[in-house]
Image 1 (cartoon, helix red, strand yellow):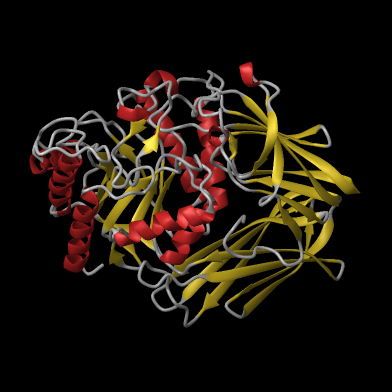
Image 2 (tube, rainbow, N blue to C red):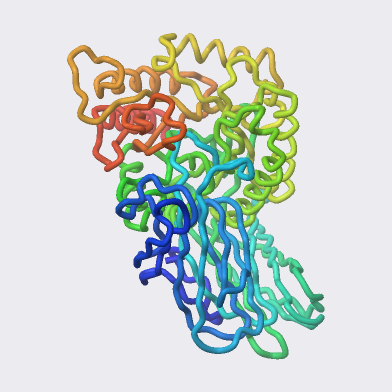
Length: 558
């Protein structure tokens, strides 16, 4: 499954999931070991490969011909893609999709090979030993498509409301593999159709634009997550040669004074941070496991999820669209020091991830905000330059959503003039014993009186405490379930009672594996701050979070 809905009728597409690939280890003492596996999968879940760092080759066969487009939704953390032994694509970063087209492939059976590499090195600025696991493998779906000489690369839909009617802008990116030619594009939304008269498209990428004014549409919101489909069909020489379907929702996000508004109403965020991590699947969670996580989030009374600390599998975002779960999605960077940010590969790699994230996930109505550079060097002038460039890039790609970043720099951050929303990760009652109210009030007063964040919405994007599942003690010692329950009760009560806080994200949804090279004193080589453990077993704090979140919803009515 690539998406949770059909994306093509005309274009021939074959998903290379639910089949066996041949995996071969290429590094170290595992080199040469070979056996069948399925994809998506992380090789750390294969017997004997739990700590494997190196290269691995995945190979399978497919049947196609003509112009063949290979789409990989995620390979960790670098990829080389070969068709019949010929290199057709290279890609960096596990968490964003990429594609390549092989022209004029002979009709018949062909070999597809993907070489993944999860090693750390100076060449990689974003995948570094960290407080989460950097897995290896073909960890998201792969598809093979047959495309015409002219095909649709993407369709972006931008809804806006003028107070009376909804207007919809549609931008279709078209790729022409051959000489200049006339192309007709037909776009339909909600039984309305727009036909763009023949356009002469040069070789390469072109963008065609259409406008719709629509009446009697239903808005998308967490309470009513109504989705619409845009259908784009390409016609060349009187023949329909390609199509692409995308989903979107009619909703608007705006910033007014100290509030984030969804369809004109203030947002109240009750959320959890979530990593793509599971002891059975690594980072390659199947659809059923994603859905189970979201059902638990909804049971907790949460209305939002933060994709810490990278773009998520698009199937997960599809489910958030369908279930009405608001999403803070962020690019890939966590806790990078000034020295790490000065790696010459940092800026181009971070900008590549940001560009691929926004272009790929633009249409998801559940995504209400873009985040960047979690807990990086925002207390330095060089860091500030990096934040400024990345915010400028996002705003050039998407003018409809606000931007933010999660800071941990207590009274030293230099960057609050850049985002639309000021966001902080705070851990009173865990890393220090300061009362929650006093700590938050002190921090918020500083933001309002000493920084360029004055007057902006304010979010707590991480708060929490560690608790090891099954560790119970009458002393409520740290790392016990009792202490975690007590700490979260005080933390959530303090944050949600703050009059100028737009909401909170708990760190985190589930316990996760961390890099062996980093581990940082974490018991079990895990980050144990989950409301549920890695197997999704609820801890004592689960019912406490559920009660507080539901009481908050009753109080605010949303």
